Length: 415
Image (cartoon, rainbow, N blue to C red):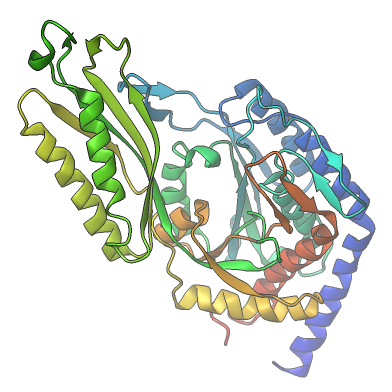
């Protein structure tokens, strides 16, 4: 790096000190967003949060849009496929015609529905705020927003265009947003997602892939006394299948299968003709993904050959494994350098968790996906946010965008 380049970097990074004065505003907005319920299927609550986000992002965006998403196709508790309407995705764009473009995104739904007891924020101490979505991921939205506000104040901000995409369905596996990820990925140089950092502040590097499956077995009902042997017990059959699926753990590297739910049955004097299992599959690499899913489908096929039984398997690995490539390695190099300028040491960890970064990576967009604040115990009523991490993470994200604009050939082309 030349002396001239270093001087330009220092000048731009010094302008990010403005964020130090915004800590109170950032915390206040986190509380405001988290005190409104935006569970993934709470369309009214999602719309209320969306309206706030439109107001907040409008001041820095050239275009502001609410987008209809594909409907969520799911299997109900009776084993039938249904379609569910989802909330609006939000898209904000700025200088999208620029030669260098960055995609930024995160979800604004949470796992906490309106009936969940965890509905409002409260302070544990001066540093720790508990609340639904404080870390996952409304704290990340606030980091993203203020990072862009900081960038907009810099002299060189016009050299990078950006799009912000906030989806309402990530906690469901992004069934409506996934097709959008496929379409948008080729249009940007790299992506930045604001899932929470790990509790110690580390960024995720390699991620497993994930998919949810529903397996439906149908048999034949009969009177449990008079005609027991004429029946075909679907509950017994799905239970046996679930046990066989569980035995696949440890046979495909570090991939795992978790049987989360078995449904079916009814009165004990009736042989049940319906049984269903819901399971989550995590795969550690693409090869194991193909072989494991093929094994599951073969097991289902074998049941179809049994007298009086039928079996259907629904689902797929919709978030493929994220195994870092050269481009993500370059992003790792640069975020570590930017962290140095922002006064933050960057550490890394692999994780079994998945996010929309998996889908974007599979669609061809290199990305870092844990640029949100420090937090932990997500998806529980103990979810917390370390509020002292909001400003440093906003500086880090803003710095990454500035580096992309200041580097002669852009961030990923630099060495």
